Length: 130
Image (cartoon, rainbow, N blue to C red; front, side):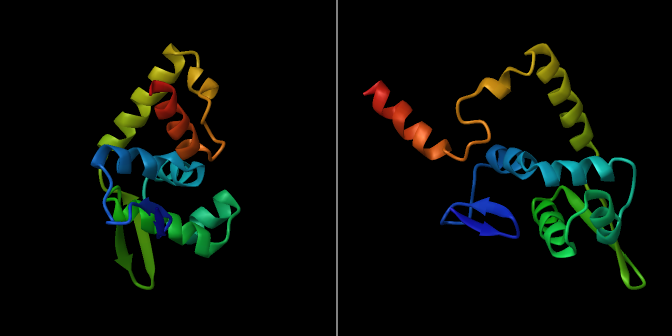
């Protein structure tokens, strides 16, 4: 897998659309950016202050969300104001919160959650099936 503006792609440059959508939201910074945009338009400089991150880092995450079609930019003078391109995204996040509450946040018990060993875990799981 390669990185492109903070988003992972396969060597061919394509992921299953659902995988790409959820991957774009899997990063805590991108999720925080989306939640900030729920209240309205923001500039990268607004986000850097809110998130306490470098402008280049925030810009890369915003570019990922833009490239995924989740965020749109509007130029006004020398500033770009970003907002959610798809308001349905907030519906998805609301449903995710409901699901997390219903499962008691059991996703935190997932053996690959947050440890970066997803591919190793999947290989082991396939070996166990054989």
